[in-house]
Amino acid sequence: MNPSEPIDLVTLQEAPEERSYDFVPQSFDDYLGQEELKQKLAIYTQAAKMRQEPLDHLLLFGPPGVGKTTLAHIMAQVMGVGIRLCSGPMMERTGDLVAIISGLEPRDILFIDEIHRMSSTVEEVLYSAMEQFRVDIIIGQGAGAKSVSIPINPFTLVGATTKSGMLSAPLRSRFGITERIDFYTDQDLTAIVKQAATFLAIELSEQSAFAIGSRARGTPRIAKKILRRVRDFAQVTNKNSADDALVLQALDFLGIDKDGLTTLDHQLLRALVEQFNGGPVGLETLAALVGEDKDTIEDVYEPYLLRKGFLEKTPRGRQIGAKRFLEIKQQLSGQKSLLSQGE
Image (cartoon, rainbow, N blue to C red; front, side, top):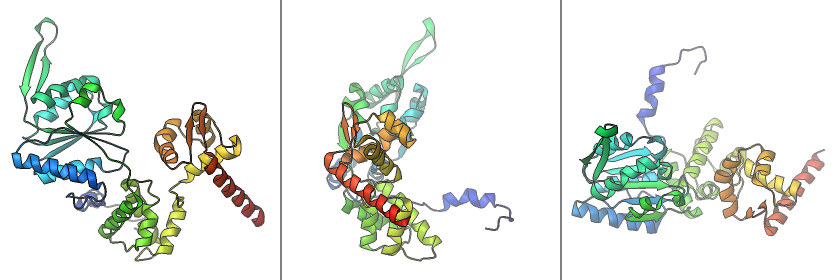
Protein backbone atom coordinates (compact mmCIF):
# COMPACT_ATOMS: atom_id res chain seq x y z
CA MET A 1 0.00 0.00 0.00
CA ASN A 2 1.31 3.41 -0.93
CA PRO A 3 1.52 5.62 2.20
CA SER A 4 0.36 8.61 0.16
CA GLU A 5 -2.87 6.88 -0.90
CA PRO A 6 -5.98 7.32 1.28
CA ILE A 7 -7.02 4.33 3.37
CA ASP A 8 -10.21 2.63 2.22
CA LEU A 9 -12.14 2.46 5.50
CA VAL A 10 -14.98 0.44 3.95
CA THR A 11 -12.56 -2.28 2.86
CA LEU A 12 -10.89 -2.39 6.27
CA GLN A 13 -14.23 -2.72 8.03
CA GLU A 14 -15.58 -5.44 5.74
CA ALA A 15 -12.42 -7.55 5.49
CA PRO A 16 -12.80 -9.42 8.84
CA GLU A 17 -16.31 -10.50 7.86
CA GLU A 18 -15.35 -11.96 4.49
CA ARG A 19 -13.62 -15.07 5.84
CA SER A 20 -12.49 -16.71 9.05
CA TYR A 21 -8.78 -16.52 9.81
CA ASP A 22 -8.72 -19.66 11.91
CA PHE A 23 -10.00 -23.19 11.31
CA VAL A 24 -12.93 -23.91 13.61
CA PRO A 25 -14.01 -27.59 13.86
CA GLN A 26 -17.71 -28.16 13.14
CA SER A 27 -17.92 -31.78 14.29
CA PHE A 28 -16.27 -34.18 16.72
CA ASP A 29 -14.41 -35.75 13.78
CA ASP A 30 -12.84 -32.39 12.91
CA TYR A 31 -11.86 -31.83 16.54
CA LEU A 32 -8.46 -33.49 16.93
CA GLY A 33 -7.19 -34.87 20.23
CA GLN A 34 -9.00 -35.51 23.55
CA GLU A 35 -10.34 -38.83 22.20
CA GLU A 36 -11.82 -40.12 25.46
CA LEU A 37 -13.59 -36.84 26.19
CA LYS A 38 -14.92 -36.64 22.63
CA GLN A 39 -16.44 -40.11 22.89
CA LYS A 40 -18.23 -39.18 26.10
CA LEU A 41 -19.61 -35.90 24.78
CA ALA A 42 -20.66 -37.52 21.49
CA ILE A 43 -22.75 -40.07 23.41
CA TYR A 44 -24.24 -37.46 25.75
CA THR A 45 -25.25 -35.11 22.93
CA GLN A 46 -26.59 -37.87 20.70
CA ALA A 47 -28.69 -39.32 23.53
CA ALA A 48 -30.15 -35.90 24.37
CA LYS A 49 -30.93 -35.30 20.70
CA MET A 50 -32.74 -38.67 20.41
CA ARG A 51 -34.87 -37.84 23.46
CA GLN A 52 -35.44 -34.27 22.25
CA GLU A 53 -34.31 -33.06 25.66
CA PRO A 54 -31.70 -30.51 26.68
CA LEU A 55 -28.28 -31.88 27.47
CA ASP A 56 -27.51 -32.07 31.17
CA HIS A 57 -25.58 -29.05 32.49
CA LEU A 58 -21.87 -29.44 31.76
CA LEU A 59 -18.78 -28.05 33.47
CA LEU A 60 -15.55 -28.05 31.43
CA PHE A 61 -12.37 -27.17 33.27
CA GLY A 62 -8.77 -27.07 32.18
CA PRO A 63 -5.97 -24.71 31.11
CA PRO A 64 -6.71 -21.84 28.71
CA GLY A 65 -6.58 -22.43 24.96
CA VAL A 66 -7.38 -26.17 24.92
CA GLY A 67 -10.76 -25.93 23.15
CA LYS A 68 -13.53 -25.56 25.72
CA THR A 69 -15.45 -23.00 23.64
CA THR A 70 -14.96 -25.05 20.47
CA LEU A 71 -16.45 -28.14 22.12
CA ALA A 72 -19.53 -26.14 23.15
CA HIS A 73 -20.01 -25.01 19.55
CA ILE A 74 -19.69 -28.59 18.30
CA MET A 75 -22.27 -29.85 20.81
CA ALA A 76 -24.72 -27.19 19.67
CA GLN A 77 -24.04 -28.14 16.04
CA VAL A 78 -24.61 -31.86 16.71
CA MET A 79 -27.84 -31.24 18.63
CA GLY A 80 -29.10 -28.70 16.09
CA VAL A 81 -29.69 -25.98 18.69
CA GLY A 82 -28.55 -22.41 19.19
CA ILE A 83 -25.75 -21.28 21.45
CA ARG A 84 -25.25 -18.03 23.35
CA LEU A 85 -21.78 -17.05 24.51
CA CYS A 86 -21.03 -14.82 27.47
CA SER A 87 -18.33 -14.27 30.07
CA GLY A 88 -18.66 -14.51 33.83
CA PRO A 89 -16.94 -11.19 34.67
CA MET A 90 -19.21 -9.31 32.21
CA MET A 91 -22.42 -10.27 34.03
CA GLU A 92 -22.37 -7.93 36.99
CA ARG A 93 -26.14 -7.62 37.54
CA THR A 94 -28.85 -10.25 37.83
CA GLY A 95 -30.79 -8.46 35.10
CA ASP A 96 -28.00 -9.21 32.62
CA LEU A 97 -28.33 -12.94 33.20
CA VAL A 98 -32.14 -12.88 33.23
CA ALA A 99 -32.21 -11.08 29.89
CA ILE A 100 -29.93 -13.69 28.33
CA ILE A 101 -31.69 -16.74 29.79
CA SER A 102 -35.18 -15.52 28.96
CA GLY A 103 -34.16 -15.18 25.30
CA LEU A 104 -33.05 -18.81 24.94
CA GLU A 105 -35.02 -21.20 22.75
CA PRO A 106 -35.87 -24.72 23.99
CA ARG A 107 -32.74 -26.91 24.37
CA ASP A 108 -30.39 -24.02 23.54
CA ILE A 109 -26.89 -23.95 25.06
CA LEU A 110 -25.75 -21.08 27.26
CA PHE A 111 -21.94 -21.02 27.40
CA ILE A 112 -20.40 -19.01 30.25
CA ASP A 113 -16.64 -18.62 30.06
CA GLU A 114 -14.64 -17.96 33.23
CA ILE A 115 -17.70 -18.93 35.23
CA HIS A 116 -15.64 -18.90 38.44
CA ARG A 117 -15.42 -15.09 38.15
CA MET A 118 -19.19 -14.56 38.14
CA SER A 119 -20.56 -12.49 41.02
CA SER A 120 -22.34 -14.32 43.85
CA THR A 121 -25.63 -12.47 43.32
CA VAL A 122 -25.76 -13.47 39.65
CA GLU A 123 -24.75 -17.01 40.56
CA GLU A 124 -27.71 -17.38 42.91
CA VAL A 125 -30.10 -16.62 40.03
CA LEU A 126 -28.63 -19.59 38.17
CA TYR A 127 -29.64 -22.08 40.86
CA SER A 128 -33.38 -22.09 40.13
CA ALA A 129 -32.73 -21.60 36.41
CA MET A 130 -30.61 -24.75 36.24
CA GLU A 131 -32.82 -26.96 38.39
CA GLN A 132 -36.38 -25.74 37.83
CA PHE A 133 -36.07 -23.70 34.61
CA ARG A 134 -37.36 -20.52 36.17
CA VAL A 135 -35.83 -17.34 37.51
CA ASP A 136 -36.91 -15.51 40.64
CA ILE A 137 -36.53 -11.75 40.63
CA ILE A 138 -37.48 -9.00 43.08
CA ILE A 139 -39.67 -6.20 41.75
CA GLY A 140 -39.94 -2.95 43.67
CA GLN A 141 -38.26 -1.80 46.86
CA GLY A 142 -39.02 -1.64 50.54
CA ALA A 143 -42.44 -2.74 51.79
CA GLY A 144 -43.85 -2.89 48.27
CA ALA A 145 -41.20 -5.31 46.98
CA LYS A 146 -42.42 -8.69 45.78
CA SER A 147 -40.87 -11.80 44.32
CA VAL A 148 -41.85 -12.84 40.81
CA SER A 149 -41.09 -16.24 39.28
CA ILE A 150 -40.55 -16.21 35.51
CA PRO A 151 -40.61 -19.53 33.62
CA ILE A 152 -37.89 -20.07 31.00
CA ASN A 153 -37.31 -22.63 28.28
CA PRO A 154 -35.33 -25.75 29.24
CA PHE A 155 -31.69 -25.12 28.35
CA THR A 156 -28.19 -26.45 28.89
CA LEU A 157 -25.59 -24.46 30.79
CA VAL A 158 -22.00 -25.16 29.73
CA GLY A 159 -19.60 -23.54 32.17
CA ALA A 160 -15.91 -23.20 31.38
CA THR A 161 -13.22 -22.42 33.90
CA THR A 162 -9.47 -22.59 34.33
CA LYS A 163 -9.81 -22.70 38.12
CA SER A 164 -12.46 -25.22 39.10
CA GLY A 165 -11.51 -24.95 42.76
CA MET A 166 -12.84 -21.39 42.84
CA LEU A 167 -16.41 -22.48 42.03
CA SER A 168 -18.77 -22.50 44.98
CA ALA A 169 -19.98 -25.90 46.14
CA PRO A 170 -23.70 -25.15 45.43
CA LEU A 171 -22.95 -24.20 41.81
CA ARG A 172 -20.61 -27.12 41.21
CA SER A 173 -23.16 -29.63 42.53
CA ARG A 174 -25.74 -28.50 39.98
CA PHE A 175 -23.66 -29.65 37.01
CA GLY A 176 -24.68 -33.15 35.93
CA ILE A 177 -21.50 -33.61 33.85
CA THR A 178 -18.03 -32.49 34.90
CA GLU A 179 -15.10 -33.09 32.57
CA ARG A 180 -11.48 -31.97 32.48
CA ILE A 181 -9.67 -31.00 29.26
CA ASP A 182 -5.98 -31.70 29.68
CA PHE A 183 -2.96 -30.53 27.72
CA TYR A 184 -2.45 -32.12 24.30
CA THR A 185 0.31 -34.50 23.27
CA ASP A 186 2.93 -33.45 20.72
CA GLN A 187 1.41 -35.90 18.24
CA ASP A 188 -2.08 -34.40 18.58
CA LEU A 189 -0.68 -30.89 18.21
CA THR A 190 1.23 -31.96 15.10
CA ALA A 191 -2.05 -33.13 13.54
CA ILE A 192 -3.75 -29.87 14.56
CA VAL A 193 -0.94 -27.83 12.98
CA LYS A 194 -1.25 -29.77 9.72
CA GLN A 195 -5.03 -29.29 9.75
CA ALA A 196 -4.68 -25.54 10.30
CA ALA A 197 -1.91 -25.33 7.68
CA THR A 198 -4.27 -26.81 5.08
CA PHE A 199 -6.85 -24.18 5.94
CA LEU A 200 -4.23 -21.42 5.67
CA ALA A 201 -2.88 -22.87 2.41
CA ILE A 202 0.62 -23.46 3.81
CA GLU A 203 2.68 -26.47 2.72
CA LEU A 204 4.22 -28.13 5.77
CA SER A 205 6.11 -31.38 6.10
CA GLU A 206 5.49 -33.77 8.97
CA GLN A 207 8.80 -32.72 10.50
CA SER A 208 7.93 -29.01 10.34
CA ALA A 209 4.48 -29.60 11.80
CA PHE A 210 6.05 -31.55 14.67
CA ALA A 211 8.60 -28.79 15.25
CA ILE A 212 5.73 -26.34 15.76
CA GLY A 213 3.45 -28.68 17.69
CA SER A 214 6.15 -29.84 20.11
CA ARG A 215 6.90 -26.21 21.07
CA ALA A 216 3.27 -25.18 21.64
CA ARG A 217 3.20 -25.94 25.40
CA GLY A 218 0.51 -28.58 24.91
CA THR A 219 -2.00 -25.94 23.79
CA PRO A 220 -3.73 -25.79 20.36
CA ARG A 221 -4.23 -22.01 20.62
CA ILE A 222 -0.48 -21.49 20.96
CA ALA A 223 0.22 -23.95 18.12
CA LYS A 224 -2.05 -22.02 15.75
CA LYS A 225 -0.56 -18.72 16.86
CA ILE A 226 2.97 -19.97 16.08
CA LEU A 227 1.79 -21.30 12.72
CA ARG A 228 0.38 -17.91 11.73
CA ARG A 229 3.67 -16.23 12.62
CA VAL A 230 5.57 -18.83 10.57
CA ARG A 231 3.25 -18.01 7.66
CA ASP A 232 4.12 -14.32 8.06
CA PHE A 233 7.80 -15.17 8.07
CA ALA A 234 7.45 -17.33 4.94
CA GLN A 235 5.44 -14.67 3.12
CA VAL A 236 7.93 -11.88 3.79
CA THR A 237 10.85 -14.04 2.66
CA ASN A 238 8.99 -14.64 -0.65
CA LYS A 239 8.51 -18.37 -0.16
CA ASN A 240 5.35 -20.11 -1.28
CA SER A 241 5.91 -22.98 1.12
CA ALA A 242 7.49 -23.16 4.55
CA ASP A 243 10.24 -25.78 4.22
CA ASP A 244 11.93 -27.35 7.24
CA ALA A 245 14.82 -24.91 7.30
CA LEU A 246 12.53 -21.89 7.09
CA VAL A 247 10.29 -23.18 9.90
CA LEU A 248 13.28 -23.66 12.21
CA GLN A 249 14.56 -20.23 11.24
CA ALA A 250 11.16 -18.70 12.01
CA LEU A 251 11.00 -20.45 15.40
CA ASP A 252 14.45 -19.11 16.28
CA PHE A 253 13.32 -15.66 15.16
CA LEU A 254 10.28 -15.93 17.46
CA GLY A 255 12.54 -16.90 20.38
CA ILE A 256 10.96 -20.35 20.94
CA ASP A 257 13.43 -23.15 21.65
CA LYS A 258 13.01 -26.92 21.21
CA ASP A 259 11.45 -27.22 24.69
CA GLY A 260 8.86 -24.54 23.96
CA LEU A 261 10.59 -22.03 26.23
CA THR A 262 10.31 -18.36 25.33
CA THR A 263 12.67 -15.48 25.99
CA LEU A 264 11.06 -14.69 29.35
CA ASP A 265 11.27 -18.33 30.42
CA HIS A 266 15.00 -18.21 29.79
CA GLN A 267 15.30 -14.94 31.70
CA LEU A 268 13.59 -16.49 34.72
CA LEU A 269 15.82 -19.56 34.68
CA ARG A 270 18.95 -17.50 34.06
CA ALA A 271 18.15 -15.22 37.01
CA LEU A 272 17.69 -18.24 39.29
CA VAL A 273 20.98 -19.83 38.19
CA GLU A 274 23.24 -16.82 37.95
CA GLN A 275 22.03 -14.73 40.88
CA PHE A 276 20.65 -17.30 43.33
CA ASN A 277 22.56 -20.46 42.40
CA GLY A 278 19.32 -22.21 41.54
CA GLY A 279 17.19 -20.80 44.35
CA PRO A 280 15.02 -20.80 46.30
CA VAL A 281 13.87 -17.22 45.79
CA GLY A 282 10.58 -15.41 46.36
CA LEU A 283 8.23 -14.81 43.44
CA GLU A 284 8.15 -11.03 43.93
CA THR A 285 11.95 -10.87 43.85
CA LEU A 286 12.02 -12.99 40.70
CA ALA A 287 9.40 -10.79 39.06
CA ALA A 288 11.37 -7.64 39.86
CA LEU A 289 14.52 -9.10 38.33
CA VAL A 290 12.92 -9.91 34.96
CA GLY A 291 10.66 -6.84 34.91
CA GLU A 292 7.39 -8.74 34.72
CA ASP A 293 4.24 -8.72 36.87
CA LYS A 294 4.28 -11.53 39.44
CA ASP A 295 0.69 -12.58 38.63
CA THR A 296 1.64 -12.95 34.95
CA ILE A 297 4.61 -15.11 35.88
CA GLU A 298 2.51 -17.26 38.21
CA ASP A 299 -0.45 -17.72 35.82
CA VAL A 300 1.21 -17.73 32.37
CA TYR A 301 4.84 -18.87 32.57
CA GLU A 302 5.23 -20.80 35.80
CA PRO A 303 2.71 -23.65 35.14
CA TYR A 304 4.58 -24.83 32.04
CA LEU A 305 7.99 -24.59 33.75
CA LEU A 306 6.62 -26.62 36.66
CA ARG A 307 5.06 -29.22 34.36
CA LYS A 308 8.30 -29.68 32.40
CA GLY A 309 10.39 -29.94 35.55
CA PHE A 310 12.37 -26.74 35.05
CA LEU A 311 10.97 -25.14 38.19
CA GLU A 312 9.97 -26.29 41.65
CA LYS A 313 7.78 -24.68 44.29
CA THR A 314 9.00 -24.83 47.88
CA PRO A 315 7.87 -23.13 51.12
CA ARG A 316 10.87 -20.80 50.76
CA GLY A 317 10.18 -19.86 47.13
CA ARG A 318 10.95 -21.02 43.59
CA GLN A 319 13.97 -23.09 42.72
CA ILE A 320 15.42 -25.18 39.89
CA GLY A 321 15.66 -28.93 40.36
CA ALA A 322 19.14 -30.48 40.65
CA LYS A 323 19.03 -32.20 37.25
CA ARG A 324 17.75 -29.15 35.37
CA PHE A 325 20.16 -26.90 37.24
CA LEU A 326 23.18 -28.69 35.79
CA GLU A 327 21.70 -28.63 32.27
CA ILE A 328 20.93 -24.90 32.40
CA LYS A 329 24.30 -24.06 33.93
CA GLN A 330 26.08 -25.93 31.15
CA GLN A 331 24.04 -24.11 28.51
CA LEU A 332 24.83 -20.73 30.06
CA SER A 333 28.53 -21.53 30.31
CA GLY A 334 28.48 -22.59 26.65
CA GLN A 335 26.89 -19.29 25.65
CA LYS A 336 29.53 -17.36 27.59
CA SER A 337 32.37 -19.25 25.90
CA LEU A 338 30.91 -18.47 22.48
CA LEU A 339 30.76 -14.80 23.42
CA SER A 340 34.36 -14.80 24.60
CA GLN A 341 35.47 -16.43 21.33
CA GLY A 342 33.69 -13.72 19.39
CA GLU A 343 35.59 -11.06 21.28
